[in-house]
Structures are given as structure tokens and as C-alpha cells.
Length: 281
Image (tube, one colour):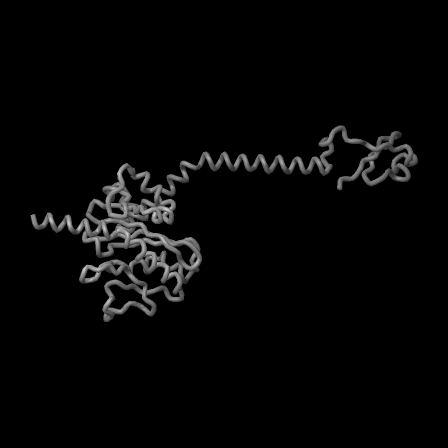
């Protein structure tokens, strides 16, 4: 609590405390010669509780306002950075270097497909990237973003749950829409050195050349196999090594790949049928 101030009427000495001193240390007059100095207003005393509280409130509001203005003014730049990061990941999934190959150089078209594999009309490229912002809701609503590369490959966004939180990525398929050309994955909070390894280049390289359909044309996706994928295994073409010590994350990636890629089967089948008809003609 702020201390009171008492002024000596004789010499002007100011004493701070709960009461006036017994005598003035300067001129020696008794306490009766002191008068308490009263603040002129509620907030005139900078040492008062009221002043301190008001000052704190004003500073908090001011700082919050400045932060809000800064955030709003930087929003366009932040959105541009997010868009650029997603475009770089798509390019990287195609096996290209984002530093030398730009998104516009490799991608011909971005679309959102419906459950039958048909493009949703009226959706712009901006709408496709907006859908990537909340893939959980996008997938739940039956909308499936896809990126068609100029070389005939496609890039499919995937989203799922790891051990602790969300995992996501982009799977690039060769023009046969079966063979994996490349994959990029990331996570929100998987364990460093364990589940977080799904974001490492050595792990992602394991997917290249794997297929998501078996020889009979049945969709099988890709499985992260505990103990490692071995060439002698009958499903080797559809398996990669699981993360050592990251079983839950590995299971999450397996589920993510299956649950997301299966939504594109109607599109893939229609694409293959169209190509077959063109070949027959």
C-alpha cells in the first residue's frame, strides 16, 4: 500500500510514512506542525494503488492494440509465406528442387474432386489452397484436393494423426497413378529422434517406387512395417520400414495414407479408363 506524505509547515521537509514524525529532523518542530499532503485527484498520486492499476490496464490495452495492428498488417505476408511453403512441398514431392523449379513451372492445374472423382465446379486454385488450411474438415466434407503436374504426375495431399498430434504431407504419383514418385511429410509434435523421423529425407526416400495397387489392380495403399520391409516379403512393393521406436507414429502414417488415398480411387479408375479408351482408339 502506498505511504502517506506529511509536510513540515515550517521548513517544508516531506516525510513519508503512516504518520508524521515526532519531530522534524530538519527544524525540530513537533508532529503538530506537520500537515498531510492529500492527492488532488484519484490518480494524481503516482504511488497510489489506483494509479498503478490504471497505468497497468492502459499499458496492457495499448500493447494489445499494437500487437493486433501488427498482426493485421502482416497478415498478407504471413498468408503469402504459408502459400509459398505449401507450393514448395508440392514441388518437392514431385522430386524437384523448390529452389530451381517453381510451382508454376511444374503444376498445370489444381482441383477439388468430389466423392465420384469429378472436379467440383467453380473452385479456383485459391480455393484449393484454402481447403488445405483445414484438411480435416475438407476431407470430412467429401472434398479432395489434387494437383496435376505438367508431366502427367499428380500430387495428393494427405492428413492424419500421429502419436501426439496431426501429421500431414503430399504424395506424388507417376502418370500410371500407381507408383509413388515422391512423398513429403511433416508433423506438429512427434517425438524428436523417433516419430519425428517421418519428416526426414532418408525415411521419405523409402516410398519412391512403391505402388498403391497390387498386380490385380486392388487398392492396398502403403504400409509401414514393423521390423522392416524385406524384398522376399510378398507385399514388399507396398511396404516401407516403420520408424524404429515410433510405432504409434508409423501406424498413424499407415492409416493416413490408406484413409486419404482411398478417396481418390474413383478419379484414378476414371483416369485409367479414359487412357485405355484412347489407346484402343
